[in-house]
Length: 114
Image 1 (cartoon, rainbow, N blue to C red):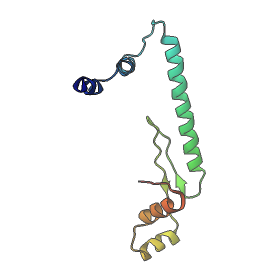
Image 2: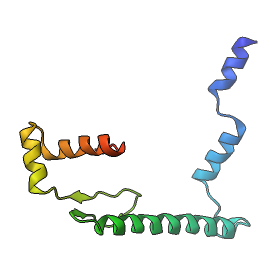
Image 3: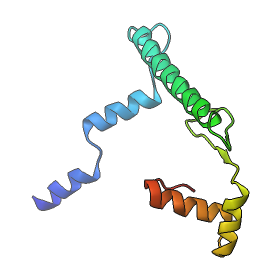
Image 4: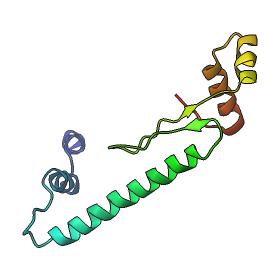
């Protein structure tokens, strides 16, 4: 009985199999569920696009920060121009400016950057 119980956990359950099937084979035009699927998919996409745009706009409004628009994914890659004083402080500590910035940001806010 234990062997049977453990074997069951190795296989995906029925809801997992159904959801995977729906993800790889979504409704097609002409299917009864297609209008609702299309509406929901477009709504999610537009919402993500709107939020990505707000993020990029907020980053670009900050002094010393510039960011290109997000394309294809929800990733933003801001460029931060550090002031000369920050660069000098990093050199005094024997760190690269971006390392010092990352460590100070982590200490001050808990935000971890790569």
